[in-house]
Image: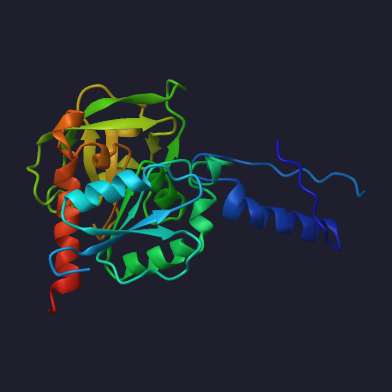
Length: 42
Length: 229
C-alpha cells in the first residue's frame, strides 16, 4: 500500500492526479493493477 | 576516438555496478568506451549505447522504473529513434522495458531467489545487428545474475514480429515466459537481455561467447560513425 498526500481543490482532482501518477510511474500495467481509495481530508 | 576505435557510451545510473565491466569488455573488443553520467541530457557523438547492469536508483518501486526518467534516457530514446544501436544488459534491459523502448516487463524470479550462474542460450535470430556473427541455433554460454529476470510479454505478438532473439537452452533460470532471454524492438536496433555478455569476454572467466554480441555491437558502431569517412 502506498499512502500519498495530495494537495487538490476537490476529490475528483485528487483522484485524477493519483491516476496520472499510477499510469506514469507507480504501477506497470503489464504486471500490476491498482485501486485508489480517497481518505478523509486532513 | 580513432577510426579503429568507435566511441560507445555506457550510461551510468546511481546504483549501476556493471558499467566498468561493460567498458572494459568494449575496450577489449576494440571500442573507445565512454562512461556517461545519467544526469547529462546530451549524449556525446557515439556509435552505440549500452545500458549496464546493476540496481539503478536502488531499483526502488520496480527495477528500472525510476532510471527511465533520467535526463540521459531521453537522449537514448532519440538515439534509438534515429536507428542507433542500444543494448540493455540485465538492469539495462529492465530500464528499456520500463521506458517503453522494448516490449514486456521483468518480474521477480519464479523461485523468488537471486540466481547467479552460467546459462546456455540458443540464438533465435542472426539478422539483428547484435547477433550478426552468430548462427541461428548456436548455443552460447553467458552468465546471469539477477533477482528480477522473469520476462513477461505477449509471446504471440513477439513471435509474429520476430522479436525474440535469445532463449534459455535447457534450464530456465527465472521462469521467463517461453524461455525468453533476450528481445529486440520492432526495428531490431534496440536489444535487451538478462545474461551478461560483458562477463564472458575472457577465457579466464570460462566463456568468451559474450564477445560475439559485444563485438558485433562494436563493429556496427564503427560502421555508423565512420561510414561517411
